Image (cartoon, rainbow, N blue to C red; front, side):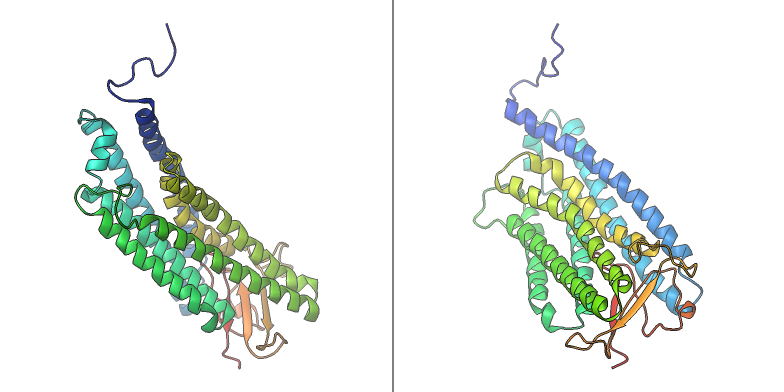
Length: 349
């Protein structure tokens, strides 16, 4: 007797049909695995923020906004997984006898409400993550001019995401239907380009700050900036790599896209939470333990518009470092973003 799992394939389905069904089912399972990682990261992030906020009113206020942000990301990731799970059940259990098989049912009823809700959750989480990254880029550069083009790209990505939802919500429509204008591929391409662009801007700025700090204050202070620059690269790589592979497979109409999309939805939410967690625990700021006994370190360096040590401060700190614990603190410290934890404060100008 043969041990092949294809000994009794569904009647009337080709190997290509079976591969498409397998990719949809396996993608749902991989999405569940990624969600498990998301739950663990969210729980640790919540615990660290909630119990490390400090007793000051300002610290509690910042922590409250961070908690709202990570709760929104976690909610969107949960809704996306729940909707995908429900669609998988409808495909393979409730409607497996549909003429043409589960694939035919999926393409016919793609615009059902539960599926559109999952797509909306994905797009909202992407909107939140990219929006915060854009805001932090503005804060670290302290220049609206540098953010004009990224802001335009961000608005274009948002517009494309709305068109994707509108297009997929039409009856008998889906993201793979042959239409005059297909918005999904431009949406993903623009969103990924924006993410990479902003990450490069942030890393470039931090490397420049590291160079100026090394010249003015020595290698020890420069290491703080390079640590955060490395954190940005690390946080951007999982999302960027997964998203680029997805876009390529989607453009080539490969079933591998079905394996990646549920995972991508969770990675998009995990990345900001990982950044917040690393900074909150002090790992993103200083590679060495603090000699003063505090959790994490704090560096405050001042640069003018030409890079000289003057005027506007550029503060980096961990959440566990309170404002009262460091008398040299020149500006408020802000933490927790998709790709960096820092603030450019011009209050001393």
